[in-house]
Image 1 (spheres, rainbow, N blue to C red):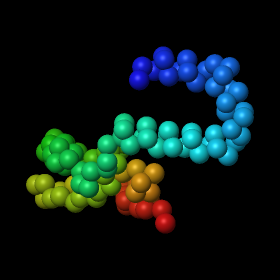
Image 2 (cartoon, rainbow, N blue to C red):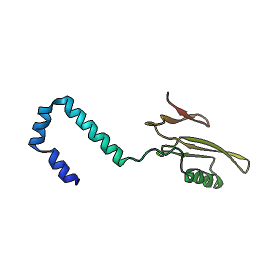
Image 3 (cartoon, rainbow, N blue to C red):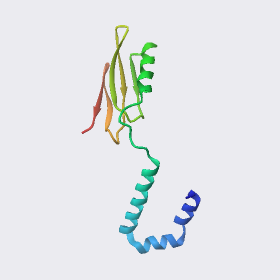
Length: 118
């Protein structure tokens, strides 16, 4: 359905009266059902593993001389240690808070740890 048509349906006096007549309980149930349907239609299921391109990106940065690579906003928490030319290189993917409840903890001077809130 065209968004403008849908909006004009929602934002008129007849719809407001119907919502008022239905009461808050039924209105909330209908709104939740419509929200769930929208979410299922427009959100892809979460992948189980990170795309290989993330580790390849980190590996390339290690070859360029970086010791630590941190990625975020990808929803794939990972922690990988790789040895390049005798150096220990660390790759972290922070993940996300909503699904995995993951975050990266830094303890000075140079200690990183991928953690999960429980």
